[in-house]
Image (cartoon, rainbow, N blue to C red; front, top):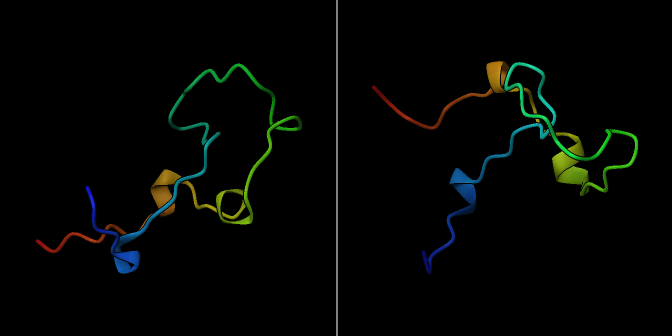
Length: 51
């Protein structure tokens, strides 16, 4: 956990409706970084894994 590899950094939209998480804050009151605000939905992620 002491190494950071930016090429593997990913983000996921915090309020993705497909995840069904009941957050205790509404979307209009959430304070997000620019990166988090632009995060894709789970279904739109390109996983870094190779099969």
